[in-house]
Image (cartoon, rainbow, N blue to C red; front, top):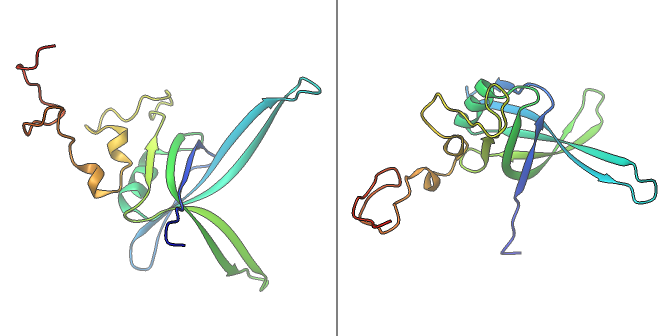
Length: 165
């Protein structure tokens, strides 16, 4: 199939602190466990029900690994955008094992922190000089400043006094 898409978007909470390790090449890799939950009211009994799914996430992007290591803790709320990837291996007893992971590759994927370090939802990261939205981007196209409306070479942060509003 020529036109196919492998994209996963998760918003959830970390079940434990990120595990960061280094490969023999020195490249860092982070592993996360993210819980997503849904709740509903049972029509028959009227009682509230909830189901939680756990997702394994692997981050190969060095910059995103640094952010995960520095700012994420158990309970942190995050937005993750990556790809599903299946992996097969043999365990110590020789049994064939299989897992499905959400992978953020070196140049693809996104990690956005939805809590501040203090845990206030939506506060972002204030003291670094960058917004949380810029932090999680791994695509070079998304890092460029956006031109302001009306062109003229101005960036979104600059004001133009000639605009009448």
